Image (cartoon, rainbow, N blue to C red; front, side):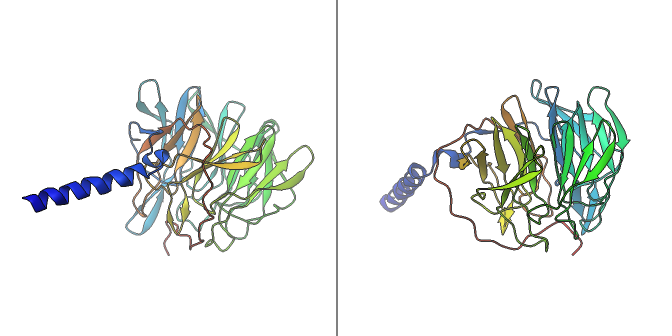
Amino acid sequence: MRTNHKRRSIVRLMLGLALAHTPAFAQSQSWTRLADMPTARLMAGAAAMGGKFYVIGGCVVQDKGVTALSVVEAYDPATNIWQAKAPMPTARSSFGLAVAGGRIFVVGGTPSDTRSAINEVEAYDPVSDHWTAVAKMPTARSQVGAAAVGGKIYAVGGNAGHELVFEVYDPVTDRWATLPPLPTARRNAGVVAIDDRLFVVGGVTPDGWTPVATLDEYDPTASRWAVRPNAPIAKTDFAVTVQGGQIVVIGGFNRHALPSVEAYDPKSAKWTVRPPLPVPTQFPAAASLDGKIFVAGGTSKLPLATATLFVGDLDPMAAPMPSPAATGKHQEPSLK
């Protein structure tokens, strides 16, 4: 009996020491789980409009095959309830998504497995719950990033030899224009806009295997690129959004699914650590709404898709930056 009591005491002591030396944010106290999405999925897109959080498209992996989704669901933070919306006309995943003129634009993507690509562009009006097909991209591609600056939508990079492609769409004229090639060849990059500047971060090399940490900034007025400090962790398959004027990179992949969250402040040109996700997540979708970050779906381990929804109230943290992660091979839900 004494021996068992002594063993239990040692275990309690060890647990106490472990907790005492664990950073506060490692316990994910800044993340709260909300109502699950009706549809589990990965490689979807997300946007926040009209006080609601929208998750669009994506895919699931079943029987060694990838099935693209057209499902659109909206979450209302006031009621903690999801509602089905008009499905996207073209089922797809790995697309770019941007908000402009009160509409959500879905750009390119793949309608089946991760090897194919389309140039269809469709716009969703949350007020009327209606989709409209608009002018197609000049270059069909998936694993493309997108963001809106000055009312125009910029489509960045892509797969299968289109890693340097840079095109812009004007919703007013319904026309696309081709811009000079990107300074960094990549696919699956995170693309956001802050203060009339376009930021492109992370992604994976053209061969589809090596995550990158590069951060580039584009000034549409001057048509000029500038190199900014690399992200602290090279990764791909993450979600990216803007909160409080900062770029927030959420989850992702480097050798394995990651829970890490990092933020870049364009004003100070510095990266900081934010509280990590409660679970490692690859291919999540995220958007900011009322100062909070909503993160939906993804996977902790392929091929299983999740339906989880987390919300984070993440203030910047003056935490030391982690060392750059060792680069590993990139895994996608494909038919390989």
